[in-house]
Image (spheres, rainbow, N blue to C red):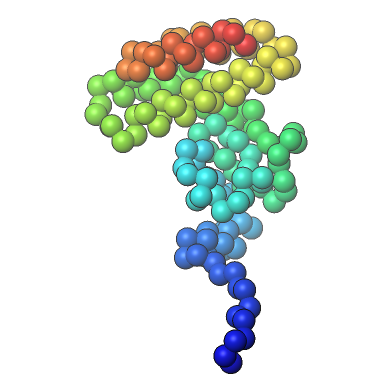
Amino acid sequence: MVGEKAKQRTYLSPQRAILLQIIEENFADRPIYFSNFASPAFYGGLEESFQNCGLVSKLLPVKTIDSNYSVDESKIEKLIRPENLNHYKTMKEKDMPRVSGIVMSGYSSAFLYLADIYKDSDQKDKLKSLIKTYKDKMKIDINTECETKTIKELENN
């Protein structure tokens, strides 16, 4: 009617509707992971239930922020084991411009995240080993400024 105010409604965007459908159809059957390097707009506000696993985060059915579930330390440790990084240096020979920077940043973030955990729990031997692994496996002189900065941050922990 004329002069009648419409009720305010909230609609799902197509992107959010697809996200909800993926979760609804898969959550009970298999874990759902999100890239740690996507735009937060793609997370649909679910970040409070993410468990950091290194390069990805796993969606859990509980809020994980400021809890023991916010990070899966063992998954990050597995990701950055020296034997799992043997082919990392191939980035230097392979031209992957859309991926290389993200990959480098992702691994650096995982190393720094783990370094903070080791520092907070006074695991000095693990921290030393982590720094050695970074220097031996990750320093490949592609982005020396970033690599040097990461090493300094690791050593300052």
